[in-house]
Each structure stands twice: as structure tokens, then as C-alpha cells.
Image (cartoon, rainbow, N blue to C red):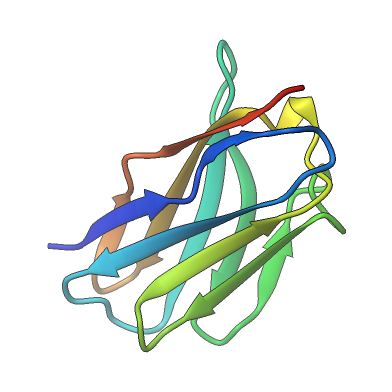
Length: 116
């Protein structure tokens, strides 16, 4: 069984930065991909960024150039550095891991609020 725990969310002013972390526990097999998604009130959950166990990254157009995803495989942790935050980035941010062997798991989410 894999568990994911997100942290680092909070309240930040527009233009500010936050760094989210997602720590995994349990057996995680490679190859795998770790993701960040977000869900704003009244909206569907949407893809934000992903990173493979080989280090390849992908981003939603809305966050390109502002967000950076990274991972520390030894610590089984994925990060999301969010810069130049906008009010429309306000959402609950979730991490997910997918592996053909381990399966798919989601974290419980962390709230990010961008407001003055």
C-alpha cells in the first residue's frame, strides 16, 4: 500500500511563491510518474504537472514558466515550486503517483489560496 502526504499549502499574496511537497511511503516501483493536480471550487480536477522516474517533466499551459516540478527519488518525495502566483491558482492541490506495478494512488490534498 502506498500513501501520499502533501504539505506546504497556505495563504499567499498575488505574485508570491509557495513550495508544495508530497512524501510517499510504501513500496514504489519504477518506472513511475508523479503528478500534481488541482481542483478549484466548483471546477473539475485538472492536471498541473508531472515528472517521470527518469526526470521528464510536463506542465499545463496555465503554469508553464511559473511552476517547477521536481523529485527526490531517494526520499520518495515530489515537489512543486510555484512562483508568480495568481488568484486563479487558488485550489486544493493533490499529488498522485502512477506505476504499472504499484498502481495509482492519490494524496489527501493541500489548500493553496492566493489573495491579497
